[in-house]
Length: 200
Image (cartoon, rainbow, N blue to C red; front, top):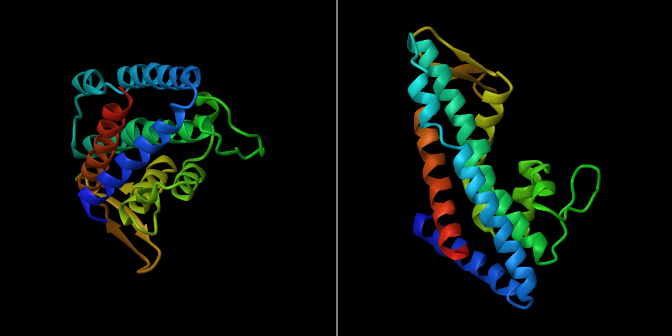
């Protein structure tokens, strides 16, 4: 998916959803206030600089473990937060999202409890095609690596190389964690910037 194409589509869809909120000024103010409150709180909690400055890896293996933690932090932080904002916006506009207990979601906190795959499917169904793993292959790579990190399915060697099992080749292969992390950070930052520009 071309970089500029998805950004334009994303911005148009966010603006469309925000314009629907205009029909009820009270509803719009509540939604925007909720989003801004959560935005501020999340940005404060995602500040990893303090953590990194205190943690000094003693060797390459320890550095690789820190890199994995930072990847998970990015995925569960900014990336998931953007997904949550979009879902809350759609729910506020009357679209039905439900959790695993088949409970309909009504608040931002409820949105956070729904699995990321379900939220991405929900968003794709409602116009956010850039979050479709079939169209945006990076999303699948982001999610799979997140799961491998979170569920300890990787091998970390003493030289700092991280290996993951490739079920197609039946071999352990080096994971380009820093490259994937960089791609995830760029995607998350772009979404966050567009959301911020549209909401404020």
